[in-house]
Image 1 (cartoon, helix red, strand yellow):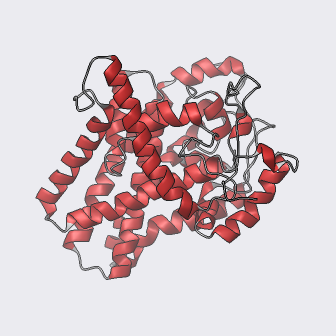
Image 2: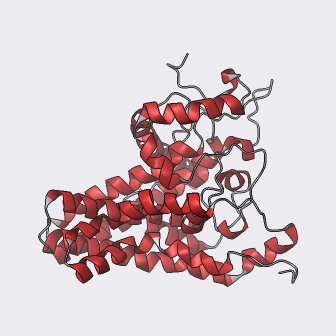
Length: 369
């Protein structure tokens, strides 16, 4: 790495471990205070504390120079931080199941626990997202294992070989259309993502002369990991572990899909006169440079560079001046997607401005006029 350039965030990147640690942090607070209301810690941190810190600390649009990229990509420090996420995630899942089955919680406290553990599972999908783009074989297994608590094993296939190919097109189940509410998007992206992942693997395995029900099916491998994990936790803590596992997985998956909804809302890649789809560029993803939430999310919010250059690791992702910018980080925006009138009032004018008033260039919901 050039001596003239230093990663100013280098010693702050362990903040990425806060989110997968939220269930363990909540457990510590419950033990220290005797109050089960601290099981809501995950929601308070993600939807309260992080947006406040984002507004206080601000944004950072600086990029590493090209001369530093290779050294950043090969520095094991960043990989070890990513690797540390998995044991924290799995430990948090176990602690959550123990609390749900072995402690006396009222319904609201149980919901808070499910949300906090679900946030940890959602963070695991983000970790899987990072591992899934690595070339090394072991990284792919780490991605699938990270997806197991959220029961979202198909994400490994659909995101890498479906979403990245079809992003910002009407046919992509993970790209939200202008005027499409989150509640209309959610079933479309979940069912569409599973169907797409199954088709992708069916075609790949057929080309190899293998059955779709082969052990080589990446979807089946991911789902099998969930089955083994859930079976082990049910065996250890009883059948009451199962509804909790389902609840936290549902919340974790919905969290991922809320982020998907935000990341490409209303944006469209166009086709030339020959019908060829333009290459995905920074202008096809919403970007955010809030420092705190980017530190905690492995710079997932620098999504424009991620889609333009999928192989780049989190520590090398860049800001582009021509990419559309979100007004806040994900923690502040996710609650708004649950209330479509608020979301539309905030984001529809930004889509319009991005296309200079020509909404015919946007990815429109068919019912939008």
